[in-house]
Length: 237
Image (cartoon, rainbow, N blue to C red; front, side, top):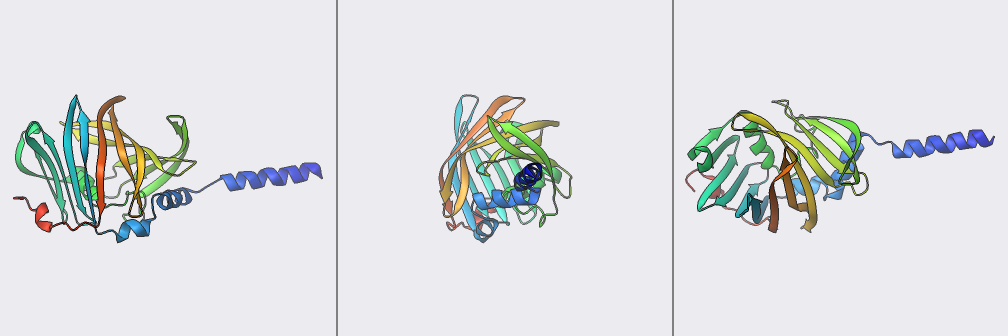
């Protein structure tokens, strides 16, 4: 009888520990404010700095949720701009030879479109036609995390997300980016979570390439539903 009871208790404990990928994503969404809260936001404005190669560069990001996004980084008196609006995207990067607006397509356009959505692409993956797969657990800086692989619809580009098993916050993501014709793996580490009108947002992001710190992004000011003039997203603005 004791063996039977012990077996039942062990089974119950295991059952409570096992979670589906959808349950984990739901808990992650709840931990940062909930998908409905993110969906109800109209605009998001963020101001901060990017530290890179000994330089501290001012950065602004403006988003009309699901419609438009513009990021602006000032580097040695010049601007690196990424822009998305209504299905089209452009970039201006004088350090890469693009001194005038250059239209982007393919995966780069999909990346900008994702940035125009305030909710992480993991939170509403079904609506976007993405696929997810739970790949077990893995430690991130001593924090045990669920490891989730997301495959994006359209271009089949993959991203891997590491969500804490304790507080269900996103700790790390891995994606790839085309840099000067080469596909490079990018690791992003998320810290400094703070609440802004019901949204829990990481204000401190460390980006690594090939295991080395590439840049550090720190947001000092985040405003939710601040009025944004759509002219900001015009090419001539």
